[in-house]
Image 1 (cartoon, one colour):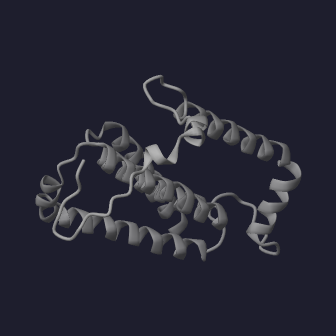
Image 2: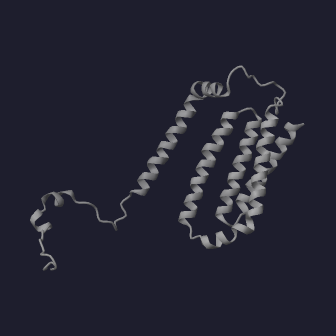
Image 3: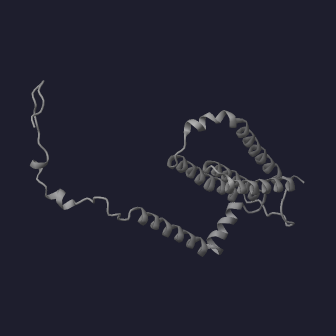
Length: 200
């Protein structure tokens, strides 16, 4: 019973959070709803018995989204005075969301101890979850795992190339002119007397 309640709770909140991500007008609110959707998706994965994937979902996606949130705050023209003025008005709603997330965590932990949630077959607990995940990742799914790493490498190289492309309006460094310059013409040492300035 508790398993079904937890499943429908997490699934409903995931769908609602995803809809609010799309329809929120403020990009900061969209990111916050996306974090809520990730937390609820992690709860669904936790109910399946995949604790490692649930923790990785929170660490990787929520951590990456938190960095995205920082980039949005830094790059967009956001009036922080207006945000601070609305903090007190939105404080009860924020506390309510925090209590809902805390209740979901408690329900997920309680439901996971009640036995298998989804499916009729019992979960094999003889082998740890991380061990089974590692064996599948590096044996059966080794080629897709390596291909995904290669795709991420190509994306990273492409981002670096696009960032450091020659735009034509910047002045490059000419090392030969720097090496061939005369130090006597570049730096002039002056020893002014006390109380007098430097004569140009």
